[in-house]
Length: 207
Image 1 (spheres, helix red, strand yellow):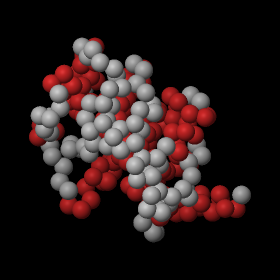
Image 2 (cartoon, one colour):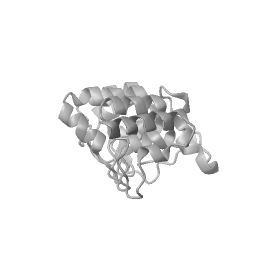
Image 3 (cartoon, one colour):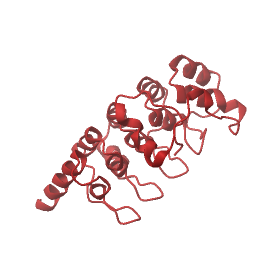
Image 4 (cartoon, helix red, strand yellow):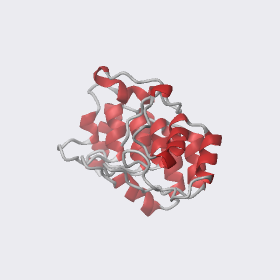
């Protein structure tokens, strides 16, 4: 998963919090370095990261490759638009046939990125576009190289609305990652996110 260098423009103001931990400073968009990206991919990457829908449409129309081709750090264009929180761009890419289950170099799918940023509307859109309960289940259970599901990412960022959404579709609050951590354990004690996850975990045990 690429890490955004500019503040996302998603539906949740706190969507960037995950990337501000440990004193990490976010660069301005014009400071983003695309020098290591092949020339033919740069227009796609720039448009996806900036959220410029017209530029994205033009870049894709002039692109001879596959829409699901990795463009940066193993991310597809759909991964990037989800990561940066650009809802209209995500919608456009899905209409153009982008793969909901494409995996980046860390094994994450676009839903991981949307949940890591706390983008509830984008997560909902991705789930809606799956249009099949079996596929939704598979997306919710997809793990990256650290064993994290999309719910782990939402829990780590303490995004209550995203957590509620994923739980409503059947995400497991008790599945462990490679470090033995459940989503519940990743949210700080006393937070709303932790409370939601604890209640969900108790409900699962009770059933």
